[in-house]
Amino acid sequence: MADLKELYQEQILDHSKNPRNFRKLEPADRTALGRNPLCGDQFTVYLRMEGDRIAEIGFEGQGCAISKSSASMMTVAVKGKTEDEAERLFDRFHDLVTGKEADPESLGKLAVFRGVSEFPIRVKCASLSWHTLKAALEAKGSVSME
Ligand code: ZN
Image (cartoon, rainbow, N blue to C red; front, side, top):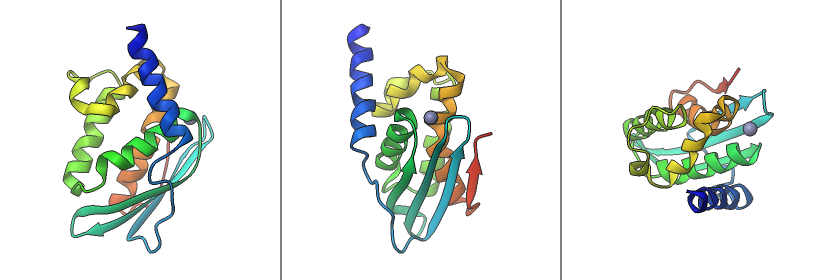
């Protein structure tokens, strides 16, 4: 189990140091700003849509290693997916970080975040970018994790 934990930490460090899709999309069809005041995490998510499919996704901002790596992995996970698929994945990710997901391994790399369910404050860090994605898809503009 110790090895597995180290592996998870490595993936989180890798994505926080070298975030994927870490760029502003210009032009973007939809954007949203997400803030987690408790930790100081703040990210903007940019989407370019083709019909109801997320053709391109980017994000900018700053935050702790958990929030940044989660945002990075979120962009990789939802790129190319339809809105419905992305929202279903959001629901499963939310179950994962709140300890309700029955089969974490089926979520692939996202499973690294199941450990945060033991730390309620970290749940907000890990799910911030997903809430921001949802706000962008629903054209809500911004979301705050207060
Ligand atoms: Zn944070």
